[in-house]
Structures are given as C-alpha cells and as structure tokens.
Length: 79
Image 1: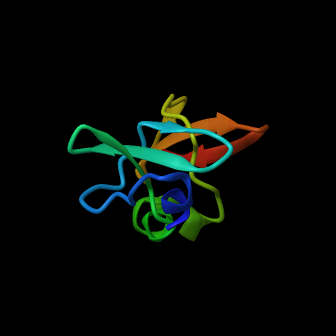
Image 2 (image 1 turned 180 degrees about the vertical axis):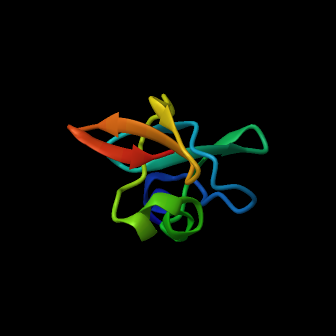
Image 3 (image 1 turned 60 degrees about the vertical axis):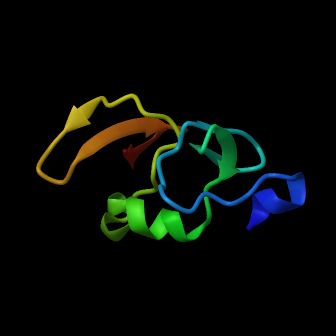
C-alpha cells in the first residue's frame, strides 16, 4: 500500500475518504490515519462504469438514479 512508505498503515475496514492530498486518499481507523488502498477505487466508484471518475471531494451538485454527482476539474464525477 502506498501509505506504508510514508509510515502509515493501509485502511482495512473502510473505503471512506476523510481527506486527500498529493500522496493519495486518507481514511481514519482506530484513531489513526491510514491510506485508502487502490482496490477501494473499484469498490466505491460506481461512476467509473458510466465513464466518469470518482470525486475527491464530497459536495454533491446533482442527484439522479445512479447516485450523487460532483463537479471537479471541469468534469462531472461520482460521489
């Protein structure tokens, strides 16, 4: 996992993103920061199958039958 090189464990019980930076997405488990593994992208990112990336943030601008949509980098993305 990418975060182990920085001294942080990989998240194991959740793919919930609490923060992100240039290193990657961060979760929080057992009162410690942990790196969200890349396998979570496939699990949580429902919008990839529709051809859209997952959002890094959490602000929803639209909601439809597929889910919540955000807008980042001039593109729609799934939340």
